[in-house]
Amino acid sequence: MIGVWIILAIVVFLILLMVGMYNALVRLRNQVKNAWAQIDVQLKRRHDLIPNLIETVKGYMQHERQTLESVTQARTQAVNVSGGTVAEQAQAENMLSKTLRSLFAVSENYPDLKANQNFLALQEELASTENKISFARQFYNDAVMKLNNKIQMFPSNMMAGMFNFKAAESFELEAPAEREVPKVSFSS
Amino acid sequence: MFELIRANKRRAVILMLAMVVLLAALGYGLGYAFWRAPLVGLLIALVVWVVLALVTWFQGDSLILAASGARRIEKKDHPVLFDVVEEMTIAAGLPKMPEVYILDVEAPNAFATGRSPERAKIAVTAGLLERLNRDELQGVIGHEIGHVANRDVIYMMTATVMIGAIVMLADIGFYGVLFGGVGGGGRRTSSNGGGGQAQMIMMLVALALVILAPIFAQLLYFALSRRREYLADASSARYTRYPEGLASALEKIASNTTPMPHVSRATAALYIANPLKTGARGLSDLSSTHPPLSARIRVLRAMSGDTGFAAYDTAFKRVSGRAVGVVPFAVARDSTPAPTRAPSPLDVLAGTPAIRKREATNALWGAQGYRFIRCPCGTTLKVPPGFPKDVVTCPNCGRDHALANER
Image (tube, rainbow over all chains, first blue to last red; front, top):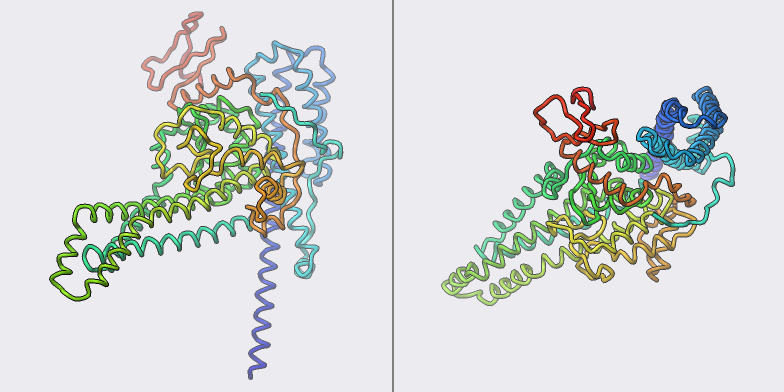
């Protein structure tokens, strides 16, 4: 009699354990999905801001046709691959970030432009969107790492295999050089 | 993240239980001393606590904001502040961006309130906006969002109420002793005859409780709230990936000598830097809700390269020389490495102190309902709320602006 109870207790314990593992996997998968949605919102926001920016700077930067064109091109490319794989989007968006950075760098040579309220507002807006993208990416990558750990590690890997949980792809910076920590110089 | 919330909740429950026991003992003792009816005292203690707790739960955040004179602002009033709050909301993965408030106060400071992340509110002083560049502001907002994400706010509010209830009862007891409430009990004792000694002892215990309970409650609370400050700093470093931002902000806050006006002891714990002290911030004592700023700055600066929770814990141990860190074990264990990012480019750091001062002032005007109209001649017209006419004339160039056309 006692033996039956013990077996029953073990079975119940195992079932509870499996339910817990399954729920944890689902929670993490949803977190990854939400985090990606957040990145997506910010990417779209940036795509929408760029035509405004080009319109504003066009009059001032007659001699920077090439810079402007490369920004427009990078944007078109990014819009085209949105909805594609994470890696494709990451590459296109990194390209776009880079061209934008060079646009703002050359804008330093145009004092009239730097005095334009509209341009300043757009600059803060784009800088902040860039930050939001990187913070959203940070949060997404953390979520992906947690999910992938659960999917690969024992014992939750058995549950993941049974219910076909797939490892998610992280959103990476393309060049390892960009990850290096530059020397901090502080001035305000 | 979830581990940190869990660990915080567990500690909050322990603290609450300890405080409930303290409150109950106080009520019991006072009831005995006054009316020889300990249960009545217990009941009174309970009623006081329930009333205060209900008020806090439903009205706490609005009361705190109203008491500090905070005004809600929109994105147009201060775009940078708004963007930074949104950035940190995203970094922390909060479900909703907190409401943003501004205080017309020269001392640099900030606080968070609201009982849940969905109802969170963040308030900053105009002095903070004037002094900090974008990266530093991000560090401070990251700290406040850290309090929200770690569920510190509701804990601080309930603990504050608990202490309030204990202090209130102790005050009643104290004046009772002074003005003869206990003497009445004593007269009854003499008419009763026997058992005087036991009653005397009970009386002394009640007296000791009256004196010690508030002190004990505060000490308990302070110990834990200092730890929460460190944890919010760790969260900020992790969200921003840039501990130097917060460190440099805290340095600027520490060098400030303008006092913070009308801050009650009850809400002091909510601020990023202790608003009650202005001089000698480096000195720490048992009665402080905040660790000394110098220690917090040193820990942040000791994090090299990595901004994860484990790195903060290591830095804390190294700086304090203590064997036990501030980050709960499970959080440090599961912490993922998070390399430090580069400082924002200079053009993003939002210009000179003069520009920041103008923006902060504009935010204050905007919060009061003023409208800004930019005239093509370069003048900005500030139109007060409830302006009686439909058209404003620019005093500089004489152009007319129809109010309906301007946003």
